[in-house]
Length: 470
Image (cartoon, rainbow, N blue to C red; front, top):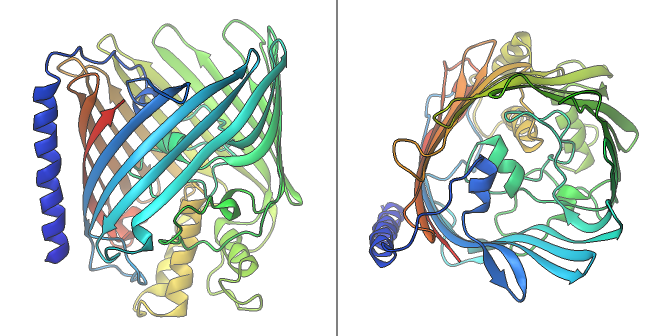
């Protein structure tokens, strides 16, 4: 009861602050309309710091979660907290270094209290260094960047097969929306060169090995650790080129390498009238299944002994596997944008794989080594930002100025096409002034006990937030 009392007291404080802020700034103009969710993630107001320009805000987010207690395969401890209180300061800044150079910083300082964490201790303060790099333009339309960079690729919203630097880059997410996670994740230390021409472009990036890869389990006491072991545990490189082939057709081709493995990728988007855009994202290369990738990683990082027998496998054969996201967006005259996508992960679970996963763990205690390994596979897929299922349907809607100006409603459903289970989320954000906004987010999972999303421990989650911009 002590934890719930603290959470409810914080909730009362937060909404008292909202009321006071609304009264204090009632004569300020409303913020400008936002055209995309990434704009909303960055925030509506500009700030300055030590001569730089960018986005500065503080946010308070209080969440409550309800979990399932009738899982066929029990979840090992520690489980997700029932409540969590986060207060953080977020900065995304850019400073000029001369006529052809600038420095970029993006980070978040978090103050956290949650069920089971305790207070005070080292886990209450963490810092996420998302980006810190220098960019130089030595010649017109030629760029050279060095530092920690959030390098993003892909045209889809629900799953990005060509977004090769997304693995293990998300920490302490407030949302399940993939398009928001792309903005808030950790960057990778790299050097990057780009040349942008009139009808073509070329980018080359190299991310060096800085330290050994760290185990999958998150460290709640990481403090100010930059987590190089998540983003720079191995050498990686990426080459990306695009060329204009026709009116509105500008395909992008990618080549990616990591250790002794490589992948190819393609991104294509084409306008089909003023309101509709169709797009395709594909990548492919030789690899093993997602379960065997997870077990390889567990052995490499010392999570399980190198000679430990596999308790679950999809088949250890290495072969060429594809990942695909294909979809379309449609925007109405009333500023509602709909996205419909189909996702395919050639390394993911088939229906037969799910049957074996449930059979291996059903009836075993949560302390069983087999159960821990089974859930490790699912945790690994989530950390890689990969769908563990082979076939998915993704639907998303975003409504700007919904019902009243400055109110944005966003929602999505990710469904397993094989069993019909789903992950869903709905979010409302309202800007009362150009300095204050508040929002409500609800998410959850649906499905039977023997289904993908219906077998996850978290059933529903409610998050209440208030933001103050500078």
